[in-house]
Amino acid sequence: MTAVNAALLGSILLAGLVLAIAWVAAARRAPDTRWPRWSELLVGFVVAFFDTLGIGSFAPTTAAYKLLRLVPDERIPGTLIVGTAASVILQSLIFITSVAVAPALLAAMIVAAATGAWFGAGVVMHLPRRAIQAGMGAALLIAATVFALMNLGLLPGGGAALDLVGWRFPVAVLASLVLGALMTVGIGMYAPTMILLATFGMHPLAAFPVMMGACALLQPVSGVRFVRGGWLAWGPALGLAIGGVPAVLLAAFVVKSLPLETLRWGVVVVVLYAAFAMLRSASTALSREPSA
Image (cartoon, rainbow, N blue to C red; front, side, top):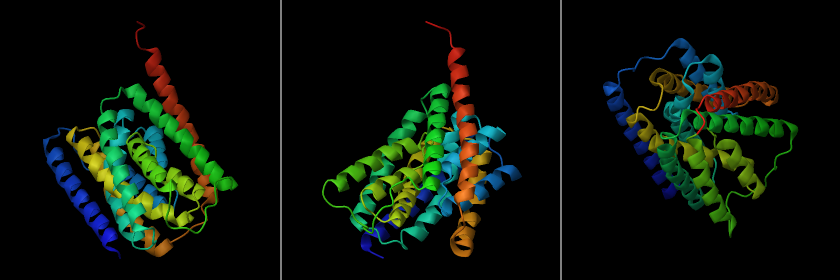
């Protein structure tokens, strides 16, 4: 392990500890805290399991919360960011040490993503409900499109590089900054990061440590803002955390891989349905507003 990787992992673990302390402190003051229900634990386990294998967690979790009505729409982004932080930190410990992405690129993209998420969280908490619904609806449509393109083999295949040089380096870092901010409204980083790096000729596996590391740092960083503002559903968030950790270990060390194409088509159908439900909710909220 390089010194840069060790510093990154140390920063991630420290950020996770700060989030845990802030979460406990905020939960003690909040009047609506509770333990997760079995359905919320099950959602946490399932989405973390398939996230570790490459499906992603934000779109399926958003779809589950919307269709099962487990979380108010405006609280879904904060619940996702805070609740999945533990499983993503665990994933980062596995993937950062197993795929040798250039340390400078890895560190720059991770720090940029965390910076974007910090500012993004502040914006999301002040957005009206309909804006959050519209943003998550758009995020779900993007996710469904990417899943379909992956199954059809229409995404860039990538190359063999594990580093970027020249103008590609700052462009990738800037893109990571933007993607970090978009994470706070529910647009997951894995698929966009994979497409970006593959387009620039990097190995497809390079997306794993970049995305996992970025999420593992940005989620605690932005999650502190969500928990301090109480902008999450406490029980479902805890369900994601408790259910997610054993699922990551099972997927990473026991199952390791699955034929995911059929599953992705199923995810496309569910996510599309949830996207239109979310956009319909946003449209309904807008139509009920009094005209100027």
